[in-house]
Image 1 (tube, rainbow, N blue to C red):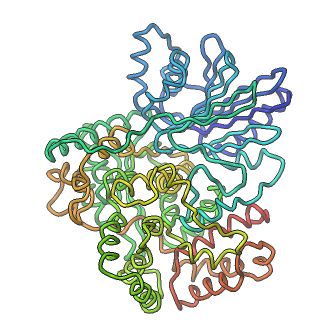
Image 2 (tube, helix red, strand yellow):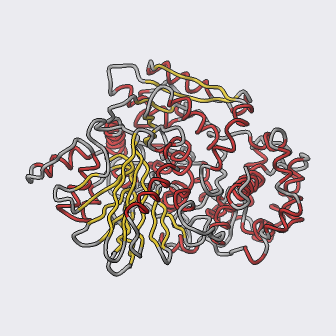
Image 3 (cartoon, rainbow, N blue to C red):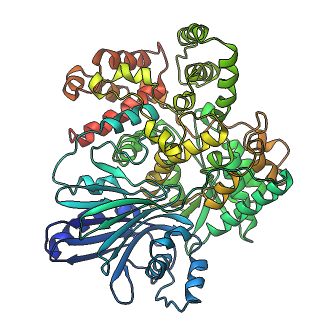
Length: 634
C-alpha cells in the first residue's frame, strides 16, 4: 500500500527541479507510506517527466521497492494498492518465459503490460492506482481500480500535467489557488461528498473508477478509456439453492485472496451482517486466533459493541474494543477533516479514523465489511423504490404536497435522535412523481429546493445528476439494480471508499474490502432481485448463505450504522467554532451563501428549535475546509 505522485513538465526542466517537486509531493503523503520512498525523473528535448511514491510495505518486504523498471529500462511503474490475483497472473507469464526479479505485485503489473499492453489492465483483481511511463511509445498510462477503492487526482495546466493519490500533492505543487467548482460545490451540499470525476476545484479531477488515462507526450493529448466493459445486468436461470452455494463460495474465495500479507492482519468487527461474515470467513481460514477490532460510544444510543462481542466470542477471536467520547473527537476532528483536502461530511469518518488508529497499534492490514450493502442490496433506502411506486399510485400529487408540508411542520426532531419522525420525514420529502426520488434519497445534506435557498443564485446548479444518468443510460432510476448501480458510481467511490481510504491511511493502516470483488458484483447483477431483497428482507441471499453459521435470529438484528452524535457535538464542544462560521462579514466576503437563510438554519439547530444535523454538519465541514485552504487558518 502506498501513495503515488507524478508530473510532466511541458517545457524542459532540470532533473533536480523535478526531484524537488516530487520530494515535496511525497512528503505530503508520508502517512500513506512511512516505510520508504522512491523517485524517477528524466529530461527530454520537449518535456521532463517524474514519478514518485511512498511505500507501506505489505507484500515482498525485502525486494518490492519502487519505482520498478523493465529489464531494458524503457518502462517504469509506480503503484499504490494490492493486486490479489498477482500470483495467478505471474504464473501465466512465467509459463510464457517472462522473467521476474522480485516477488512483488507491482512487477507483475509492469511485466503484464510489457507483454500485452493496456489489455492486461483487465486481468487485475485488486484495489489500485498506478502510473506507467513507456519511453518506447512516449506515453503515460494512469489507471484506477474497478470500484475506486484507491484515489487518483489529476490536472492539466498550460505548463504541466500532474497526478497524485491525494489532492494536497497537486494543490501544493501548482503555483495558483484554483477557483471553487460550481459543480463540485453543489454535489457536496447535496451528497456530503463529491463523486468522480469532479472535485471542489475547477479543472482538477478525480479519475473515475475502472478507467485509465492515456497521455501522449508527443502530441500533449489525453484520452480516458474504460478498463472493463461492464455488461448490462441480465438475469440468469439459477435456483436459489445454487445461487446461495455460489455466493458462499465467492465470499470465502474473496476473503482468502484478500488475506495475503507478510504483516499482521485482522478485521473491523461492528457486529453487523457484513463485518460478522467477513470475520467468520477469516477465522475459519486459519488455525490461529484472528484479531478483531470494534469501536463504541459512551452515548448508549450510538453504542452497538454488544453485537460485536457476540461474534467475537463465537469465532474465538482476540477481540479489541475501544470506547470513545467527546474528548476523543476534540483531539482529532480538525486533523481528520482537513486531511480529505476537500469538503467531506460523512459523520462516520470520525469513528473510522479512531478505530483505524487503535487497530494500527496491533496490525497493518484490516479486512472490512464495506460494500456488502451495495453488492447484496442491504440499505433501507432500497425500500424506497417500492414505497414510491405504491405511494404515488394511491396519493394524488396535490395531496402529497399537503402531507409533506404537514410532516415538515410537525414531524420535527429537536435533538439528533434520527428516530421514526426523522425517517418518516425523510421518506416523505424523497417521494417524487417524476422518477427522481432516488436522487433525492441519496442527497443526505440538502434537497435541490433546500440548496437553492442556501446558495446564492449564481452558485446554484439545477439538474445536477444528468451526467450520471447519461453514464447509467437511464433517465429514470426505478429498480433495485438501478439503485445499486447509482451507489457504485457515486456513493461507493465518492463517499464510503474515500472515507475509509483517507481515515485509515492517515494512520498507515491498509483496509481491504472482500465484498468489493468484481466477480461477486457481476454475479449478484445476474440474480433475480428477489434473491437480494425478498419482501422487506434485505441481503436475503447473503444471510441465507451463512445462516447456519450464526445463532438464531442474529442476522436479522437491526443495526443503526457507524455514525457519530455530531448533532450534539455541534451544540456543545463545537458550538463556538460553528458560530464563527456564520459571522456576517465572513459570509459576505465568501459570497457563496444567502446569509439570512444559512444563519437561521444554524441558529435553529443550535437553539434546539429544529434538529438539522446533516445540513448543519455539512456546512460546518465546508467552512472548516474553506478556512483552512482559502483563509490559511486552522
